[in-house]
Length: 44
Figure 1 (cartoon, one colour):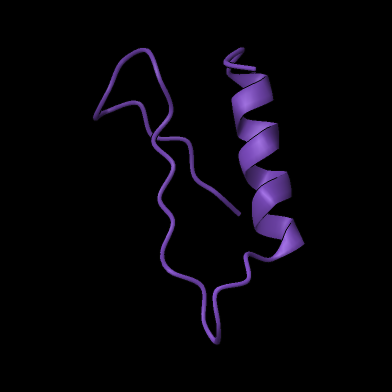
Figure 2: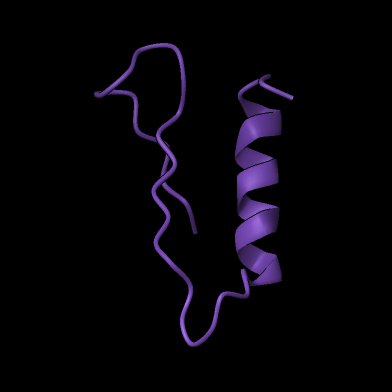
């Protein structure tokens, strides 16, 4: 699960991702977490 970090930037969430492995396929749960976090933050 993605973590919401406010210490770095007071008005936007910090989303920490790394290059997927094996291959370059981003897992569906990662996309879901990013969309959820952006939606909850009111950014989309």
